[in-house]
Length: 306
Image (cartoon, rainbow, N blue to C red; front, side, top):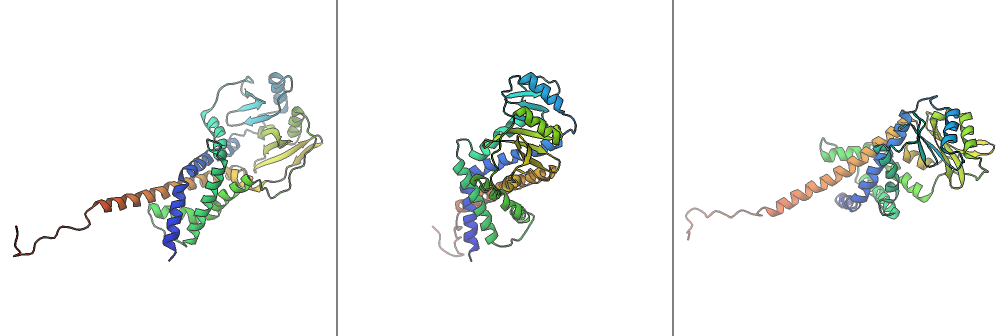
């Protein structure tokens, strides 16, 4: 039967890519937290256009800033490169260790620590290969054991387990399943803030910034994160990027982030349990080879002895 060979291939591909996969999975776990924390800390009506314009007058009087970002978790509005504490209106140098860690995780998740984007892509493709081998081995027997939990997690979450690395590869390849966003004449940053405020509660703003030569804004409307093109004649819905939306868990509001967090924990369990199963088997095999292969036979009764 092919199953023993498929199992061996499944095991060795996982071990070969275990280290980069561990980094990608753990940073993905951290990146699943921002949508949850941002949504959970939104206080409707807590930020007005007058407040934002007053803070821009105070901290960016020359109008040099090209981006605005709201961090509801830390209650900080970033204007250009200046972090402003919304409670006091003053510039702050305080950094929350969790937010700082989550911010650094994105670059590591995409490129590891030595700009090894190709290795991230190869590891993600290997993950899909490992999943395919697991499916080819057929429906397993579940049991209350480490191996049983490993199999149950993979099979019960199979559609999500496949979609997560697959959408990651789509993002790396630039696949969006939508037409490219048009380049439109952009207003100033202050005008963009006013346009967003006219259509949405500014306490739900995530950011306004230039991306790919286009001025864009993202707002959390409670049902998910909505991205707009900001043009001189108003806000226009940006083309949907379905792979990124699913991969980052920015849909269904808080529940999209919770699903992404649960999926990250499932990947952590799958990798850790897979390595543990291999290590346990290798240890048992080594212990058996160290034991005597046969016992010394006792002399038969009446046999001469020296």
